[in-house]
Image (tube, rainbow, N blue to C red; front, side):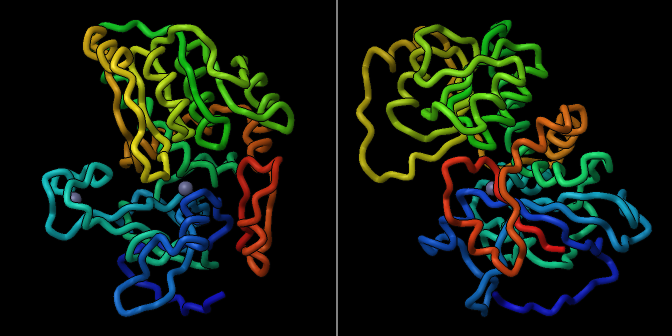
Length: 324
Ligand SMILES: [Zn+2]
Ligand SMILES: [Zn+2]
């Protein structure tokens, strides 16, 4: 563990860190050396999924002392590229963006952190610990927003949705899908543990294999090539939110490819989230059932033992590190 002295800045929002969420990206940073420390340093403070309480904020900030907040992960590149120039840094074109806890900036795994005023998003105070789900919820909100633009363009009136993978991203995707009024089908390999019940508690359907039905929209969260192809075949609009993590070529089924062309289908990729997505994700969490959200946080590890958070256990959904 690195002790980094907190240096507050008068023009920033200063926050007491409460929790951080652990995800696959953090595991890759620790295990595979993915990630990039700030310039001139060899260590990186970990974690990008934050929850904290504002200690102080500049007068022009839209958060105030006492607010429950999530810190935004990405910062625009300095160039800036056309996307960053338009404030859409989540679509950065030149890759020179920075990310807290991932790329060139220390993360939120600290008892105190600060962000420029536009990079703290207020959460419903009633969310409590579930506010740590706000960052993954923002990623999911962006996936649905991208999907919505595609289905509106193609005159698809969505009724059914398929979500592949019942990790935190998949479960939150299912939550937002149900909230859109869709009949949601979730696929994951596990037969027991908390995931099937969490899916059913939403009023969604749980499957252990991709069901052989056509769906209007799909959110793919596994990155497993065989799953991706079977979902391309079945969906009118497909939003890819999972990485394959492989360098092996993926076989292409020509019939599936032709079906995409002839069906005016959309296959979109999505990563990260913009401010509007953070707000949409936070709004969805605020309206969600609190006990359902609490069920997503399956393990809580104190900061002193944060490395325990990287041990994968079968029943893990979202593991959090307690900073307090
Ligand atoms: Zn994450
Ligand atoms: Zn950019």
